[in-house]
Length: 177
Image (cartoon, rainbow, N blue to C red; front, side, top):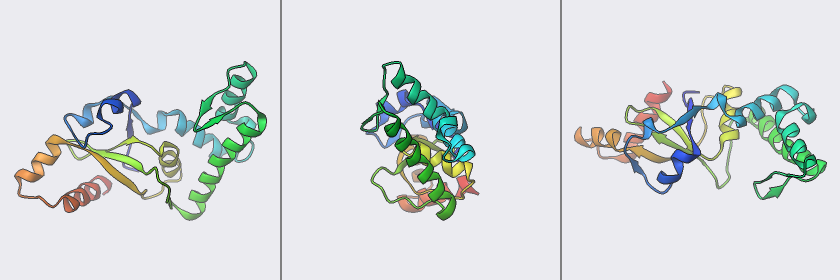
C-alpha cells in the first residue's frame, strides 16, 4: 500500500538496464490509482464477469469494430471471444488475489526502485497485479529491486553499511511501516 506511484514508460526506457540511477525519484511518474490498469482492475472488482460494463471491454470492442483491433500481450483482440478471454484473465487474477493474497510465481516479477529518500516506486511489470493488490488492500507483494538511486546507495556506503541485502531489507521495512 505504500507504493503509490509508477514511473512513466518514457522515463524507464533509458534506465531499463541500469541499476544505479541519478535522480530516480524525480523521474516522471503517475499515481498508481490514476493508471488505466488501475481503472481496469477497479472495473473488474466492481462488475465481476459482467465484462461488457468495463472500460477495458468497451475500448477493445470499439477498436475492433472500427477496424483497428488492438494488439498487445501477444494477442490481437479481433473477436468477442478474444476480448472476453482477456477480461476473464484479469477477473481470474483478481479473484485469486482476493481469495489467496499475492502469490505470484511467473517470470515477470514486479520491478521496484528505491529513490534517494527511500521511497519505493513501481518501475515496470505487473501493473495490473499492483493495482489489484492496492484495491484489495493487500499488505505486500513480491517483487525485484531493479533500480536504486545513487544518492540512496552512497548514504549507506558512507555509513559503513555494505551488506546490500540488509540495506534493501531495511529500506523496504522503512517504506512499509
